[in-house]
Image 1 (tube, rainbow, N blue to C red):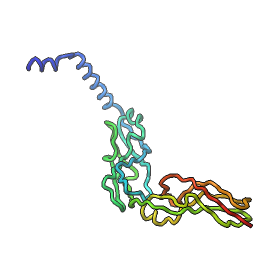
Image 2: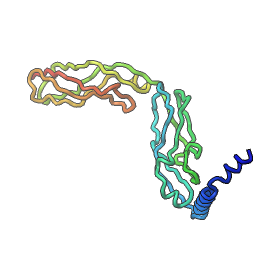
Image 3: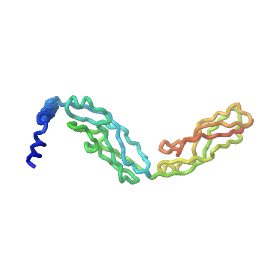
Image 4: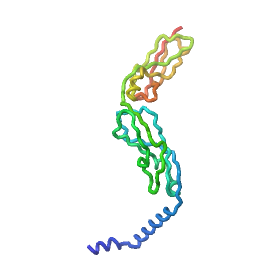
Length: 214
């Protein structure tokens, strides 16, 4: 046993002493280096967002993080190294307040977080809802009468916060100009919903058949 202990401690003793001296030298260099501060504009990362919830409030996507540390290390920092991480595990419908502090920010060794702006986030969530709505074509025909319009598909599926989805009466198409069309003609246009918090389940190209007359 004694021989084993001696082997562990004294084997390659020269290399071990060199490694120790190098580590000590690096520590001394960092300890003696002037301290510096910097403010970084960094993205806020949200993790573990419940799949059945939808965001219904405006939330800043970036934060200003003021850090302090050895000048050399501070100058080498990139924003992703000091990004606030917000864990939304267990979040329920409604409004929640989240503090942004140093505990939200994993920083490199010897770097200290001094301030985060904003210091708090107010986030509102609603349950997710999916439903079908009719497609309403936006057609104009200067000097002509629009007799009839037909869309294919007639319905599209939308998804988003429950209350916002319930308020949507129909999806719209991009504007279609049927000026000069006498009789029937089919146009192709994208469908969309006006509410920015509500979206189509999948991008949909709509065929719009327009019948005009004088």
